[in-house]
Length: 480
Image 1: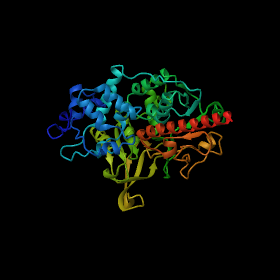
Image 2: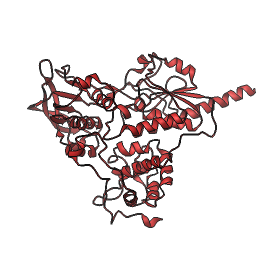
Image 3: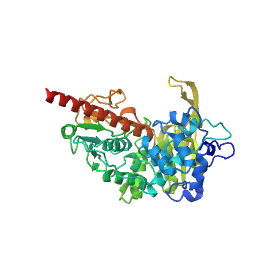
Image 4: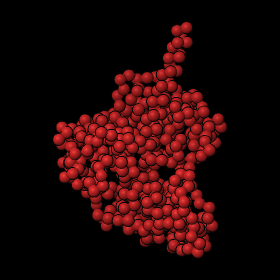
């Protein structure tokens, strides 16, 4: 019913209701309410149904966005859910944490002044409604296969691959060194962006679909990669990247300086009811402290907003480029500013001051020079522009690098790139070891959850093709 669409001219863009900053500073609940049915349909109807859907093209999963927006506008929500979940294993998660302002919504063709369709909020609404109405069912393959797949890593890439392989009837076992399923979804992302129940119900769905989980099981410590290769028809490595990048500066070893992920993990574990000694001792607790977060990505935004909620005395985000060059979501920056975070743009740390514990961050002002080979302007220090910023807790959110997997897994023949990510044949997604595949951040480097889902889905297809080819070859040999 096309007449229900193209309402962007007369209907202004509207997000779901956002809780006041003063209220949300006091808790870790999600900051947006859900759309009401009528409001979701109204916002979906703003879609222009353009001939070339740039929102779909710029989505790593190439979600059928215009189609499920149209179905939502027409009140056909179950069909909208089926279409949305056909290309995305976790639509309600991506709807919450994807940087839509840089992906689908950022490429909406509706011109400025009318503003983009609120794609992420509608996506979240569709699948939350599906869960509420019981449309999300455990997987029941048409036929079971005897081959089993071992997946190393229970993050988004591993979980997406597991779901796709289970749909094809494979027996799937996931191995993860942590005690909960979800990887960074459970321990790296705060509740105000992604409540843990959203991840945990996906785990329950996979368990009900007969996916087996081996938690607190580290490959290389509790089981070897060779054992997994002997146990399974194929192995997928989807460990993600967890090694925090450091900074070479005087005083970096002082107490009170911590990696961002350690801080976020402590906060999330405490919220899940775990006993966290580093949090209880105050080491990784921002309460009453002057907090400085160094970095400009989404992890930095998670840190500053968590510190606010823990009752920090002050929270500053130090970033060496300007706002326009910040890699994190601009929407997140706005939320942080509303909640009282101060951004110190064009400033970089030079040293950390203090005797036994950090007391100040010595910063230098930055000028953005000529673009480098990547097209980004090169940060250049301005002489004699030093400023000392008071700090009781400094969090390093400078990004993540891969761990040394060949050493950790006692697999010296596992090939890596110059960046220490796993080297794969992108056509087959197989590593240098036969039958061992890799996907997600451990291949492409630290990236977005939506890219991990895409890689997991692609890897599942390549594994299926590999095992099908092997089975046909075995049949031919047996026939001879």
